[in-house]
Image (tube, rainbow, N blue to C red; front, side, top):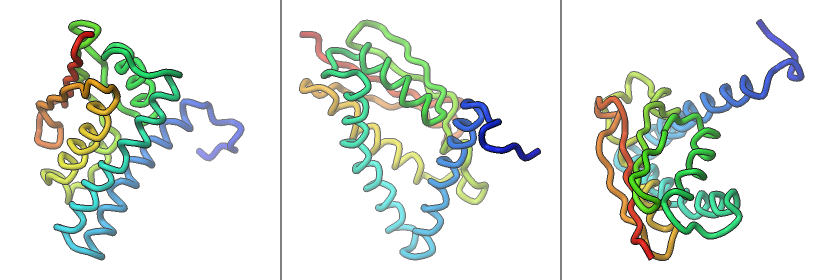
Length: 166
């Protein structure tokens, strides 16, 4: 039932916004397919992942208020960013300098239209976006390793980040 805007709770607005963002990702992809074709649309998806990196790094550093010193700090800020985006991606830290996030809920994946299921464009974008962010959050260029992709039928995505200890 419709409610006026002031009657919505913040959580309801955030949840609706997250679903909207996931749906919009697929909307622009479908539009790109119609206009430029599959090969070029996938290039655009990869380029979006590349362009996202510097903006996300700037935003993550602004949340922390300083340069990142270790993976533990990165993980705490990534938790904030991912909560904003509607991801469930808890971190498992092995040390302050090595850990991985286990993505079990992805707004974009959850909104994948049936006709795009099983495609690899989401994987290409996600790999590129991760490479554009995590290895560039620190001058030591943290190592990023990916395994498992929900868009390939896995129950979760794993993103491991390892930074050299000082």
